Length: 125
Image 1 (cartoon, rainbow, N blue to C red):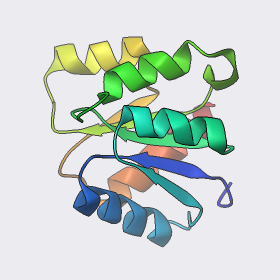
Image 2 (image 1 turned 90 degrees about the vertical axis):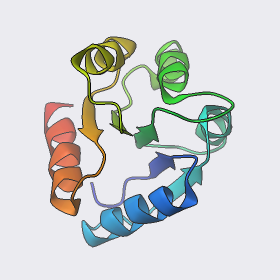
Image 3 (image 1 turned 30 degrees about the horizontal axis):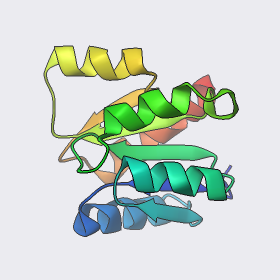
């Protein structure tokens, strides 16, 4: 699955760079970037995305709205989604999972954590 196309959604260019570098080290090199939910939805329509990594707190459209929007479309109902966020309270995590996120990482995270969460999601998919 190393040739799968991953969409990295985060309003911080620095954070996107970290995610992309981390993914690259894990063997994932086909990565599309988006800076918020609206941008991400446009990219989802334009390209065949296999896996989504999204931030929660973003302008224009936050990660939760983006996930809810994706899950409402039959063609994206089963796409794996990993949320990366600073929000760590249990209620937020439950809300994200209810919205349709497959897994969740709290910032800051290590490259190993990112890789293992992606592996977990892919094995479970």
